Length: 233
Image (cartoon, rainbow, N blue to C red; front, side, top):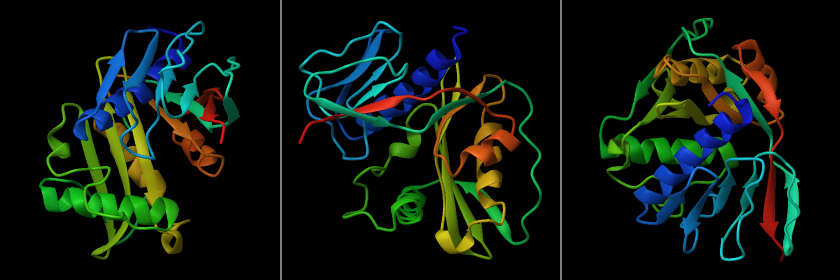
């Protein structure tokens, strides 16, 4: 697979499928369309990801459809921009400046998984999980290909990132930093640590507008702007 958008879509679908399975839900991927089977198990997850330019989700697909090539018109759904696909070639992770007092470590037990989830929710959206394990349940750290990373600054929770590795890509996600600690290089350090999990394949991610500049400085390039199609109402 050489199409950079297809690689990004594959990485997103791999993360969505892993998250679905960790929550006991079904996820189908036929190489053209990846989608949930039944209801989407969490509000932060997608219902489908298009993997090729000609993929069209059926009316039975629930939740938000990620239109990877931004070319669909879906009755009963409203499209909105969903950030930017970015990709970094395989190879050594980017060098980033040291941040004094910063430690980035993997989640090694279920207590760490709960801590990761708490920090990820709080840093990204300013709210904590309604219950521990609602998106990252106990045991999910053992899902094949998943690495959860926790950043702590002088012993205090600072942010998160994750890596989902497949034979084709290293998909980087959940890069978030506590608002009071932004601008210190923690987000760049987390991204570099996630890239370092698997340097044998290209690294992919979906960037927000605010993170795009950071990722470019770390060697990621823009390859497309997906759309998310939300069910009307």
